[in-house]
Length: 148
Image (cartoon, rainbow, N blue to C red; front, side, top):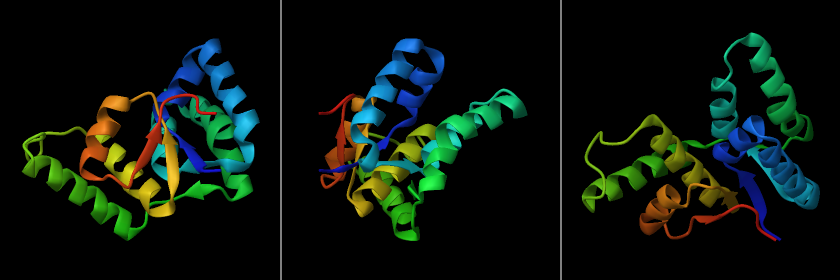
């Protein structure tokens, strides 16, 4: 059974709608022993808070349970440099221009490099960007919501 990281876009859907929350909760119930939080995803979730009260709520609901279980994946130096290599390969292939990417896309490259390094599968609704990343990083695995 693969271990999973859930991408930020699925947490955002859970925060914004009951249907998104129910879908994520169902996945979490089925795959709890195989779920991990990524530090970059945690940062993106917490950065969406409008004030400190919301920050505390987001942390309590979406980050702290993984911290308590010791299930947080933090990118290594090798993952950071691999993310840069992914971007370099995309620039070299003409898919991106130097500096022609957003902070969010850089975060996606970091998540992909870290997931690859640790052997995790990313669960995401962003198939377009992650397919692009996988085109230059074929050992990275992702799937759409909700596997299995």
